[in-house]
Image (cartoon, rainbow, N blue to C red):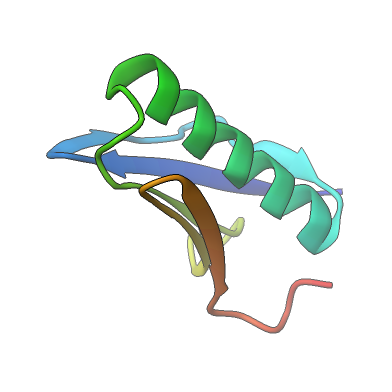
Length: 83
């Protein structure tokens, strides 16, 4: 499995991911990104402020972004290289 990095941004806050996580394809990446968005929204900002998680591959190229606005999370892919 490839390793991906999940960097979180919200309301002036940036949390860098130095370790990354092994994910199995798009489904694994999307599940991890959505989990981080929801967890952060509930624990740290009361669920109202926009939250985004930028996903980078091992060469630190942005491949996707998970964005939470209001009560929904959407995933935007910037790379077709991930299977």
